[in-house]
Length: 296
Picture 1 (cartoon, rainbow, N blue to C red):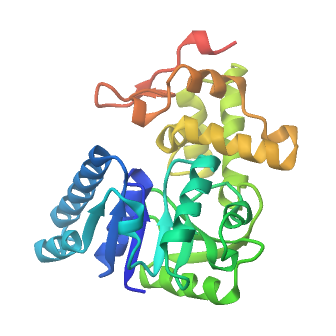
Picture 2: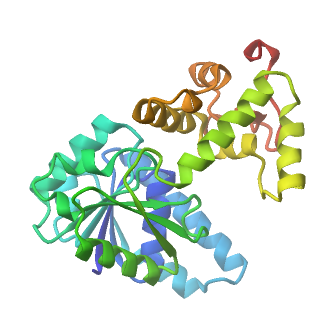
């Protein structure tokens, strides 16, 4: 597999494209939004420049990585030669189903169709295709070029051959693949999101401040980043979406999103990407942001 198509030029999509291109794969980066494509390439270039400065790669390697990426605004044209397609669009079931319907018609019968979803059922996505055995989850971690884990999620019909191929491909990227089965939240978010949600509940109940809660988890539990800061980094809207998927999937109240999280998302406080979440990022430095109006 030398031709890889990545659908979505956002944070995860450009990170996935960057990683494959850096390891010598030809990457077709696809997004219907030309502005998103431009921004995605700018992000990749900036990240490569940072690697050059840190002497992790050479200027030649940067140039070769960028030359391996071609952009498209049309899915059919972008996936024409792809041996593997990785969908990294917004975490929205209906959008993903529509994309996979298009991929079913546009891709060769031998292509592997992967989704970078962090919580949505692989089996449900695969069901809209005529080849569910070739559909699999490849859940990369953010930032993709740095984080080692790839959570490989087998749908109900995913074949052993496809699973093995994706495992070996992940290893070629210097990643550590871990195979899990298809249940809401998989492993990573089934464990992580309840912890983040409980940290938000702790704030909501007035037990401690944003910085206090994060300090306890960093200093006491050796977490590199506190759960509230991590939620800002992931995106509070993404956290809410994943919790909703698990709450609906398991019908268990322990996955119900904290009202504070719901209110913040409704108010547009989404974390780093909106400039404010649990912290304020607008002034170029992190400072506690949550106002009393959100907390009971």
